[in-house]
Image 1 (cartoon, helix red, strand yellow):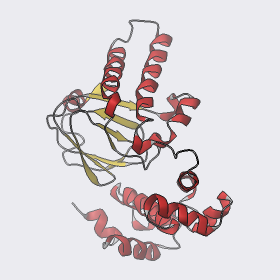
Image 2: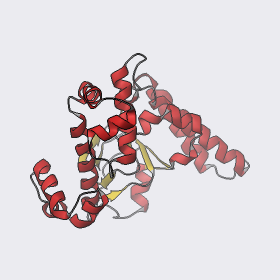
Image 3: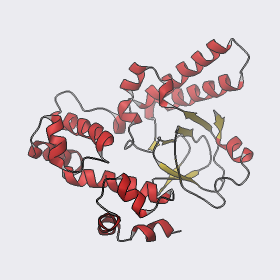
Amino acid sequence: MTTVEDFFDRHDDWPWNPPRPGRATFHYLILVTSGELLHDVDHVTRTVGPGQWLWVRPGHTQCWHPPGDARGPFILFEQDVLQAETARLLAPALAHDAPAVLTPGPDARWAEQTALQLLDEHRALGRRPLELHYALQRSLLEALLLRFARQPDAAPAAPGDRRGTTYRRFLDLLELHFRRLHHADEYARLLGLSTRTLTRATQAATGAGAREVIDERRLLEARRLLGAGWTAAAVAAHLGFSDAANFGRFFRDRTGLSPAAYAARD
């Protein structure tokens, strides 16, 4: 737990000079209270203004921009710190494909106050017994995150929305198996559905077929790994391609660049 301004002050010119992408291993949650924060998430530059939150999730590729005038609380946490029931309620917000930039809406004031309470408790180490200190920190963190569980972009499918529920179940399976299972019919069998039903659900949610969603998840992971310095051969093996040439064709068809050119870009 820190602030954006303290993070920049303490780390001199790392890690933005030169800017290098890296894989997040924690959840990064930043509230911008003033100024503007620029931050790359999965190779897309996000602009975060006052009252907005940046949420980088484990597995995302991120890249810091040079320090600007952004100010606000900066929270890092591991998902294991959350109680099981809280994690269940937060599942859509914790998912890798949830929005990176959030605006709390009616809960904005309460979310900011909770974040500031969490920062104060972190800085007050020793004010109370250590066990109580950590319990209070976890309670404040969960209270803060649950504010985001109610956001429209992170909300679960409404009751009776079968296609929405099917799509969310498909995404859960895809996140577990995208390295090994690459065909829509494989996921349809796991879900106990026909391939046509699964495709209808993905089209209703995204406008794309199930195979396209699978390919986009593999492509996202390939971009993350290439940006982190992996070779095309290593990425191909990791994502279940038969060889580097097959992976190269897959990547070039969807990005217009070879894996080597993508990795070497500025």
